[in-house]
Length: 580
Image 1 (cartoon, rainbow, N blue to C red):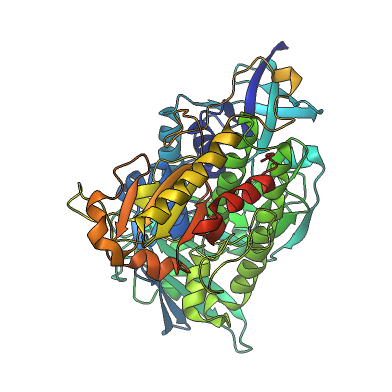
Image 2 (cartoon, rainbow, N blue to C red):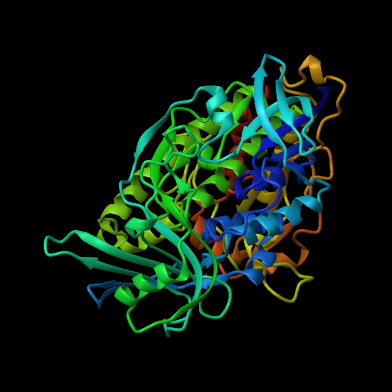
C-alpha cells in the first residue's frame, strides 16, 4: 500500500453533486481530491432538468453563462390522457426571477463542471475506488484503489460521499436509508422525434383504464438538438428487470443491467401515446430503470457526510433530485471552508443536517405524491407550486443559523433565499446591474446595507468592519487538528477568495429617494449602488434603514435595523461558533 498522503477534503463521486462540492471548495482555495470509480463520464441523459435556483448558484460561481449556451429552455408541459390534451402547464415565474427552467443532459452538466474545477487546478481521479474508511477525532483515513490497481492510504480532514444511491460512504457510516420502491418499471431513451410539439415544451401522455388507473405512460423532455427528447415510458414484459438487484444492497433505483431497449420498443409506445403520428430515430442511449424513494436518518456522522443520491432518492418528477443534491453540496462546502480556515467552529457542520435533511424529506414526499397523482393535482396555489418546483422557496427559517425576524412577516427573512433584483446603478456604468452581478464571484458573506441617508450607511459599514476585523484576527477553537497542523489554511477571504483580511464584504444600497446624493456616494472603501428602479426596496421590503447578511450559499443569514449592525453580526457569528 502506498504511503499515506494528506488533503483537506476527499470527495467520493464525480457526478454533478461531487463536482459541485469540488467547485465550491476549490474556489475557496480548499485542498480537495475528487475520485470516481468509473473510467469516464457516462454518456447518458439521466438527470436533465436545471432549476432556476441552481442557475443562481452557478451564476455566483461564474458558471451560468456556459450552461445557458449549452442548454435549452423548458417552457412548459403538455398533458394528454387517452389521446386528448387535458392540461398545459406553463413554467412561468415572476419577472424578478433572473433565470427560467432549462434542460441539459447530465453528461453535459458534468462536462461543464469538470472544466470549471480543472480551471481551479483540480482533476477527477478516474478509475479510483473508495474501499473503506475509518475516522478519529483528528481526521479520516481512507483506503483507495487507483486505476493502476494499487492501494493507497489517504489521510483527510473530512470526507464527502457523493457516490449515488448505492453509496459506499453511506454504507460505511451505517446510516439508515428507509423507504421503498415503486413496483412499476420504466425505460429511458434519448431519441429524435419528427413531431411538431411547440419548442421548449415537454409531453406527458397517459392512458387510463376503465377504472381510472394509469396503464400506459410516455413522458418526454426536450434536449439540445433538433427534435431531440429524453423519453421515459413503461417497460414491455420482455425487458423486465424484475427481481434483479445488481448492487446487492436492496436499493432498486436507476438504470438496471440486462437488455437495453431498442428503437422499436420506444416506437411502439410512441405509436400508442404520441399526440400525432410520429417517427423516432437516432437512438443515442437507452436503459431499463427502477424508481425508489429513500432518505438517510442523518446527513453525516463526525467528519464524514453524504450528499445527493447518497442521502436521498425519489421519483424524477419535477427534476428535483440532482438540483437538490447540488444545493446539498453548496450548503456543506462553504461551512467546511470556514471551519478549515478557522473562521468558524466545528459545531457549524451540524447545521448541514439540520438545514438540508428537512429539505430532502419535503422533496421526497412531494415527488412521490406528484408521481402517483400528477403535479396538476397538487392543492397548492399554482404560482407558489411553481416557485417551489424552481427550488426558490427552499428556506432554513427554523434552522440553527437563522437570526431573529425583523420587518414585515412576508418579507425575506433569515433563512430565506436572498432574492435577486435589478435596477442597481453606479455613476461609472452606463447600464443598470442586478444584485446577482454584485454578488458574482464572492465566496464569503456579504453585508447588504440599505438606507436613504448615506451617513447611516457609512456608520453601519464602520460598525460591521469593527466586528469583522475583530473576528478575522482570531481562529475558532478546535479548527487546527494536530494531524494537520503543518498545513496552511485555505485562504478564504476577499471578494474572490484571494485572501484579504476578512471574508465579510460590505455593499451599500442607497434608496431611490436619495438619488440626488448618489453622485458622491460609494467613492470610499465600501461599494455603493443606487436603487434607481426601486426594485431592491420593493422585493426586500426594508423597514427603514435595514441591513441584510447574505450567506455564501445565497440564503439570508440575518436581517436587522441598521443601527443594530454590530449586535446582529456578533449574534450571527456566535451561531457560527466563532467567539465574538
